[in-house]
Image 1 (cartoon, rainbow, N blue to C red):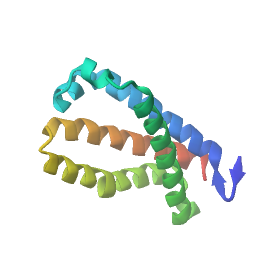
Image 2: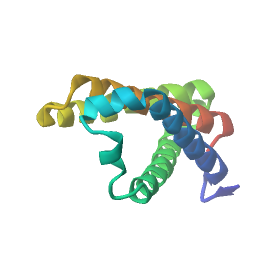
Image 3: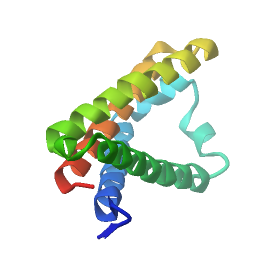
Image 4: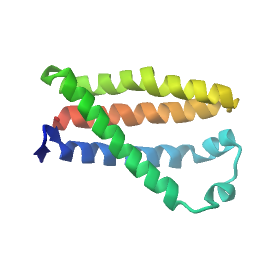
Length: 137
């Protein structure tokens, strides 16, 4: 399923893998995350779950698309599992974790929130990079 040089099947599988990982991550660390955020489960459920769910799905698709595009621009030599994992980790460290650290520092957020959310995104980027590197762009 290649269109305009992109493997959209790889992007969809990577996005789905990232979404499933996210669900498992926060299902296992939900209590710790709520404590770090300082909100109860009831408070988080106010307003419904549809909005955050849609944002999460779209974000996973955008991340997978951009990661595939980045790997594609790096060239075929990087289109491997190792290249995907390393690229995902480097993008996480250089862009995601640094941005989160700045935002959470200015928000005076609980340090544990940065750890939980930060390592969540590391897992997403590495997993999506693995899938895209494996299936190719």
